[in-house]
Length: 153
Image 1 (cartoon, one colour):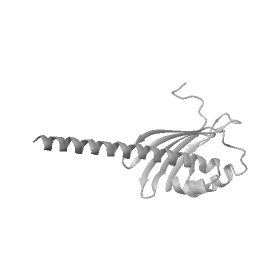
Image 2: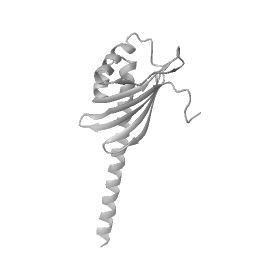
Image 3: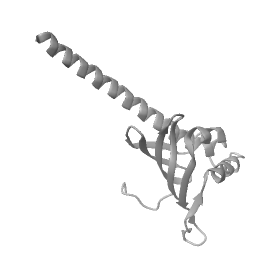
Image 4: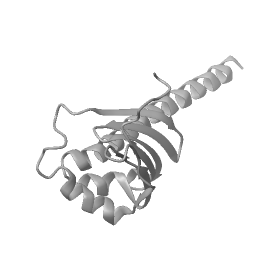
């Protein structure tokens, strides 16, 4: 009877450790996919987008127009426009460099979905991700120019 008790404890311990390792790996993979998203634009490297952004992405956002003193209307960007923007946005290296802000905060990771916050020179993005056979991919992105305020203030 004691042997069965110890076997059950051992099985639960091993299962718990495997789940913890799987969670740690998922967090690392989500974080890397978010950094790949930033570097798609910083490095003008579209291969990173193909690795980290779902082809059915829905990206919407608002940029602040300093001349008008207000935010733009909603801007939508499907995958092909994201690729086109990535090719030209920092092609000359004058918008971002190795010292530019490049932060990722993983907010949630589950078996199939995750959420990460990205802070970059252009502002903030929230990436809703899905786990695919090819890894974690952003499928829904909402962004805005640098915020004038946040909950941290």
